Length: 283
Image (tube, rainbow, N blue to C red; front, side, top):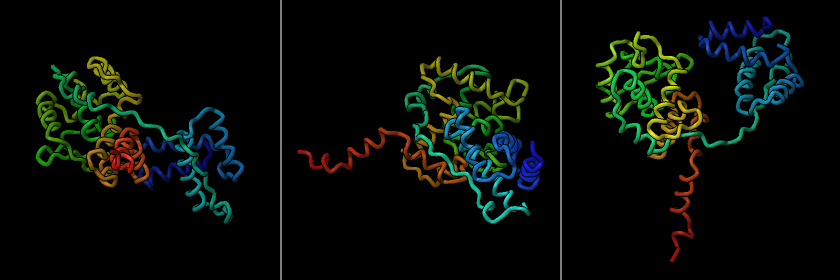
């Protein structure tokens, strides 16, 4: 990797205190950028090569965000940078607005009614209820410790992206399940292996899919993250504000949260039926 790219990543790591995962994201993205001092033509080529390799608009935009961060950094530290170069920025691609996969209300009811027995089934049950009740990310659930669970005030302290902590409320129902699970789990981690180690994401996904099949639930695509989508959609359906949802989900911008307001077509149809002038004057 070019020395200038390395310097950028090192400064992000030690001065901005970004995580190892974010550093790896920068590395992967900057590999698409051939020239560390690109002009507009080189930036167009950067995008065209990604598209030629079959990357979706969403994946391209992910790399574009990283490259734009580099360009902003480079314009501030480069002594050779001209005024025109200092304003270089790659425009984001238009993404197809897809309905994000979610679990149905009936699916969640089936999950709640299940009565697990033993360490592994109970751990899996608690994990799925935790994801559905708080909308937390998979990584946040798997790294949660009992010290971060406030049973009295029903708050979880989640360690999110960018080393940002946030407090998230949870329900009486989840508190009941967590308390019972705590009697079986003697480790510091809430979701731990028999030996007290971190549970692997592959094991997490495999267990969730098996249980879905057992309970007659059709597992949606991106099954683990679908719990987060399900939480967000139902939060808004039940009167929660987009601003509060942003805080609960740990989104850095409101733009990321607003997409949930356009997820479910049947919601729009139901609203239209109530407000339609034709319906109100029918008969």
